Amino acid sequence: QKEVEQNSGPLSVPEGAIASLNCTYSDRGSQSFFWYRQYSGKSPELIMSIYSNGDKEDGRFTAQLNKASQYVSLLIRDSQPSDSATYLCAVKRDNDMRFGAGTRLTVKP
Amino acid sequence: KAGVTQTPRYLIKTRGQQVTLSCSPISGHRSVSWYQQTPGQGLQFLFEYFSETQRNKGNFPGRFSGRQFSNSRSEMNVSTLELGDSALYLCASSLPRGLYNEQFFGPGTRLTVL
Image (cartoon, rainbow over all chains, first blue to last red; front, top):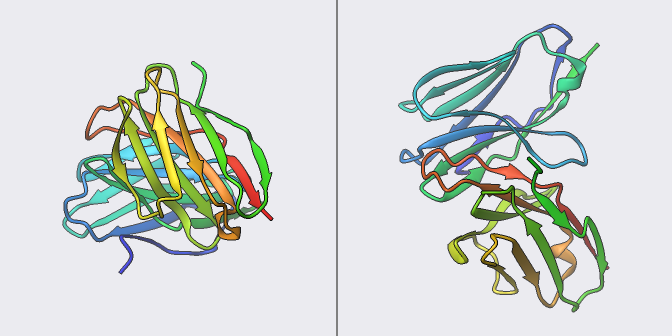
């Protein structure tokens, strides 16, 4: 079992729709959770961090964490073509950060 | 505030050579982590440095090494290059705030081994 698993995608949604990205992790001691966006040929860019159970909203982005289910998700509302990228889930325990393989999202105009 | 910088941005080397990559963290950030990214393996953790000490290490052979200087700048070295070392090497810096350790990535160094 991979330490951090994401749906490999690709995920395709129409412009204006909600994109839902999911991530599960195996280490119950994980403490911090992050979502990064990576455009093709670029480096990852931090878009959200979440540390406690529940929802955290930032603009069009909402991160959801459920530690009991070892599950973290990212919702993108009103998806735009500029949101087309690979989204990486990262999970941290102490000084150890682990990344998922990423989900490629395409938002079609 | 300037972001993380990495030099060089692109490198072409041949098998058996060695290479040194450099990373300058965001001002005030004292923790630097290195990652290797390939299409097949994704983002893999190499090592992390804090206050000139390696604090954590990933599962890479000893050919991969690094160091951090007193100004928090970091270098990584790969000796005896292999074709499989071709990858994007990413550096990320963070404030060492323990649990709330958001990492910010540099643009990366694209290494091609021929």
